[in-house]
Image 1 (cartoon, rainbow, N blue to C red):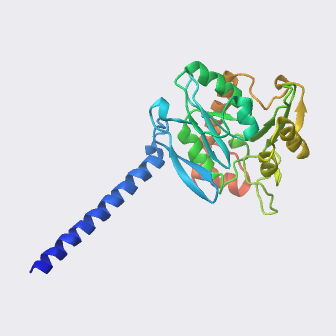
Image 2 (image 1 turned 60 degrees about the vertical axis):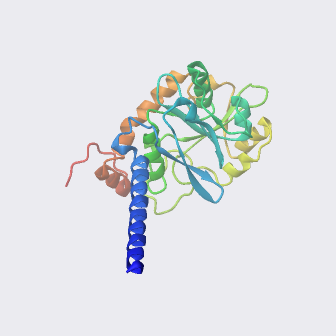
Length: 274
């Protein structure tokens, strides 16, 4: 009798534990899916790559808890402009130094709006992009692994400034995969990321070495940022460019459009259901 009672208690505890675990997983999945409302990005899960694995970093709702830098393959970096949205980029140690950020210690955001605006503008000139909602970036960046976006998604902009501060090297690449295939229906409108670029660039110890790395892979030199159409000159320009992608990304959320685009390169919009 005692044995039966004890067994019943243990089974109840086991079932409760399973229920508790599944509930937690459900809540976590709900967070990671943006709750269907990517006007609200608090708590959205950000997948940050780390050597040999991936780990989750949530963007918490309070300003001091939101990350500035997190290390992985490169340094994932965020700025939070006063106009709203988020500026995001991945930088080398040399770029971090030019931005006035540490390449040794991770940091969280500032509570000073002016500081956030200054850093946002500087990051845009280093190849970062402004996004109206963090959840919008997350949802589509994950799809890049499986779908060619081409001009629907911001390009990968690689930037290097000489230590003298004069001029800038810029390499503008497709956001899609780094290789071509004869079977590809969609031919990229920009060059693919050259093989070896990311690794070679990450090993640069000085601004000059960073410039040489980009030069080696065919980057273009501009006498000033003002001459380069790829890089925004101001925060407002960066915001306007980011907004221009919203309509394009909305197309890529229509499965009929994605099918037409992926199978034939068609950009008909809206797509009529057959």
